[in-house]
Each structure stands twice: as C-alpha cells, then as structure tokens.
Image (cartoon, rainbow, N blue to C red; front, side):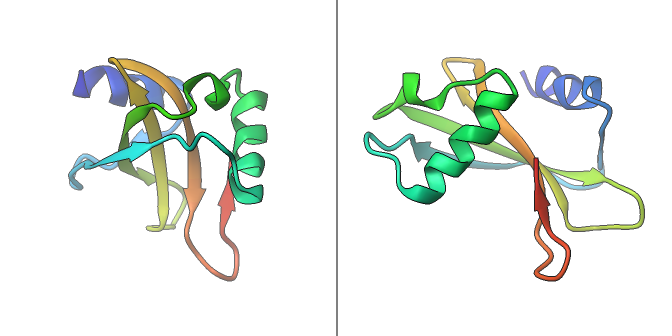
Length: 101
C-alpha cells in the first residue's frame, strides 16, 4: 500500500522525498466539525472528497515530505480509511509563507 500512496501523490505532480520516512498517525474524524475543520472540509470538497461521510470514524494519516522547489517544509498528507484515500492535502509549514491546498 505504501507504493500506492506514493504513486497517488506523484500522479498529482509532486515528488516524494524518498530519503525521509513516512509518518503514520491514527486520527478520528470528528462528529462535529470546528470552524477550522470546516475550512479543511472545503479544501477536501474542492478535491472531490467529503470528510463528513466519515464523521466519527477512525482513519490513518500518512505524511510524506515533498521535494518542492528549494523548500524543505512541504508535506503531503493522506487520510486513509479501510485502505481507501478519503482526503488529504499538500501543505507548507512556514509561518511567513505557508500554504495548504
């Protein structure tokens, strides 16, 4: 499944930094979305995903470092439930010029 997740990210046009290990975290999609989670939901809807279908469910968050221009702070996050990608994002963690998409 690791290679399928990496292939998914790379099919979107991003290059996974193979020198970094994936970070795996168990998460729960909340039953009631906070304002921040609602904003994240909007990003998911634009990408064709709907996290509200999974409210109250457990998922696994896989995080990969992305080779992106000259930056080292860009990550791909994939939310997976039952071996199916249910959402995700590409984000940069910089305070001055960070982003999420």
